Image (cartoon, rainbow, N blue to C red; front, side, top):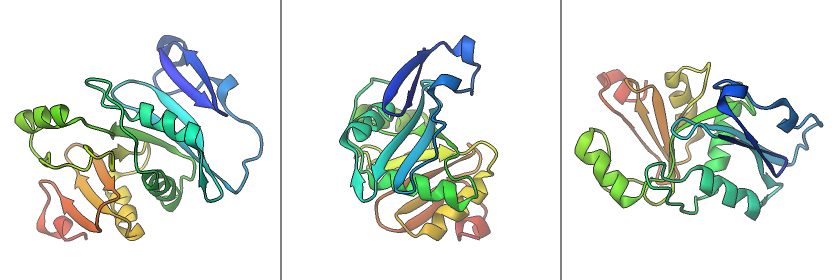
Length: 195
């Protein structure tokens, strides 16, 4: 079952009926977008869920939308939910626009991670920080279909809003609301320097 949210309403659809990456036509808004509305189109690579949602109008974050985003970005291992820093959603929206895909779909590789999930990942993989900002719901790992992850990394660095990690062998980037910094996992010296 895939959860599709559009216009504040949830629509359930079978993955077999919709294909792996298609939205149900009935759930897509066809009205002209309000320029003061800030929206995201997300796909969760672990749960197969999609979310199309307006999360902010003008300067006001929408509490109901934030709650839906928190659930969408839950720890996929144990379904724990944590409230995310909404500035992350602005980073995602601005990142998509900066690579020429405003409103484009963003694949979520990792949102919230509980301390237990983070510890388990550290035991079984490399490149997982002990005090990851994923545990604080202040970080998201992502990729965008049709956009090279190096291009995404460069665009995220140009935003100068938080940390940016690059994982070229896994084809994703990390963005967070922590201090401005960068890292590159298993990269050449030139890539590690942000070039």
